[in-house]
Length: 217
Image (cartoon, rainbow, N blue to C red):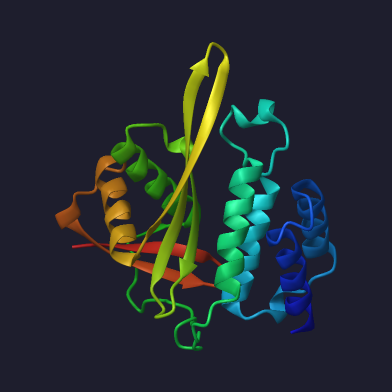
């Protein structure tokens, strides 16, 4: 619990503007990799602290790196950190049942792992926004009732003059029904599995993370 309180206090210093982004990212990543035992955290906190680590790993202080769309700007980092900090401090009571591993007794015909689920969301969102899938980044999470959702960051790259770009960021969430819809779209459009030919279930284990079981009818 002490480690959690120390981390929250440090993140709060950044959220309140007392630490510069580059210094915060460097110290946070070093601390998480070298000193923190993540196994001591409850599952929900572990996922949120890992999500924070993921966005800080993508932080790019220079504009030259941002034009490739694979990195996070200071504005994106600040927005994402505030969101995660809010979730770490919310008043929702996260029961053990809501955070339990979700596994099925049914033998799956196919399994869509975390990376392919990420691809599914990116491709489905790209179809909706008429842009490239590389403009989206995805974080999966548990909701308070034990459902699985996804938080999606959208970096829209706009030409502002020859050879220069402006990245506009947006964020939206997919609840479990919308996430299932995105995976179904991906199965049909990208993998050729018709919607009426399969059943799917979102799953989670500590060892494998988030994944989807596919059952052929």
